[in-house]
Length: 155
Image 1: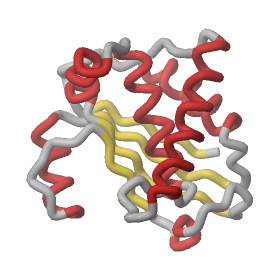
Image 2 (image 1 turned 90 degrees about the vertical axis):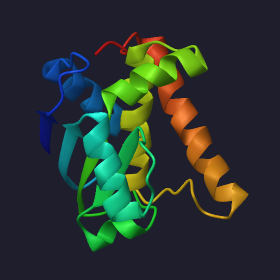
Image 3 (image 1 turned 180 degrees about the horizontal axis):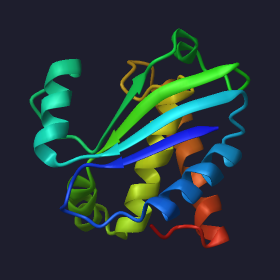
Image 4 (image 1 turned 60 degrees about the vertical axis):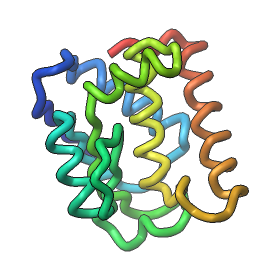
């Protein structure tokens, strides 16, 4: 399993070792099989807004983006031979979300890691199909509850 973590922002302190441990646990909970080549980048609001504009055509600042590097990532499948991609997270937006959703920063960052990894498995939340969004949301919530019950949410 190849996991790269790049902290390219100074707004929120990120403990790479704890993030790596959390990612590994989420991957196990998601039962992601095969070789994993994943990169996680923590960036500032300006950078994620630029990426969002360039790749999604939206001028909004967002909290997480997930980029698939392997064509095999396009279908929901935990048994793929290779899962390859990059997940970009904006910790300052996560921090702002904490107030909106009454969550801790650790919980919000864990949620974004889960969300990005689900996209790597082919889950979508912007589909017109309500069933698809619900499936992703349910799985995301289940993993978050498991992490909380294990006391794993601390970054």
